[in-house]
Amino acid sequence: MKKILCCLMSLVLVSWIMNAYGAADDCEADGAVEFLCGPVSPEDLAQIPNSPWIVASGMEDDGYLYFTNSDSLDSFAVYPVSNAQHELRSRYSDCPGPEMSGFRPHGINLVPGDEGAHTLLVVRHGARESIEVFEIEETASTPTITWVGCVIAPGDVVFNSVVATPDAGMAATHMQLPMGALYEWQESTGWLQVPGSESPGPNGIEISPDGNWFYIGGWGTRSIIKLSRGQSDVVVDSVDLSHHVDNVRWAADGSLLAAGHVGPETSSIFSCLSQQQCEGVSTRVTRVD
Image (cartoon, rainbow, N blue to C red; front, side, top):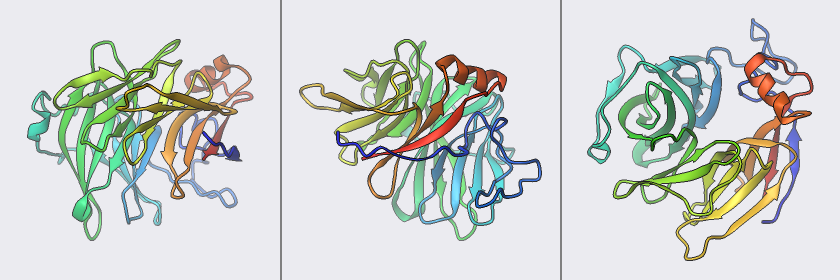
């Protein structure tokens, strides 16, 4: 895999360490950096196509999905709320139904659709371990969101990040140390572990447009892992980075953006995340081509 290691900046990410590197209480800009106040513990982001609206997942006990406007910097919770819309689709017939209590959203993935209707996949902890599925519809003003189903995680698996596959399935990382793996779901097969996907702490996940390759954020390996999908021979390649990799996203130019953490020791990062003891810990984004 050809690599262009362009460390864009050590910047203020929307991440778990907001308390260590966050905006002032009044949310005033810090030079060229503007802050959007409102979402609590935003873990992951997904832009709604052709609009200023961004979905944020608030990873806390009894958390929320938020719509945030990148133009006005407004933000508000959209799920779970008292007037939430639910419409269970037949392809998710094994889903026991909506569960709004104990909603702890984690990684998210938005799949652009036709005529302004998009699918949102959400890793969910709390009352159950699952991928929750929503439909987002663009309108002339604020988009709408409707819960349409769920896929329960396999026993003893705790998902981190999720991505849709081109054949209407999904894949999600089981971010576990010392060894985790990637799982793929199809309506006809359920969840299956992806061959060759075992690695220390697989985290963020993306997929090539043709569906032939997974790109996995190797948190424990400080790398981006390229893994074949649906091919006769399992092919694994990787490129080392200078930081632990958390979220992975395609950029508009076709490169990958890998966001993550840097610290003196791995334990320093966990201390920052859990205890707000963040001496020497920072965040970083790397572009990989």
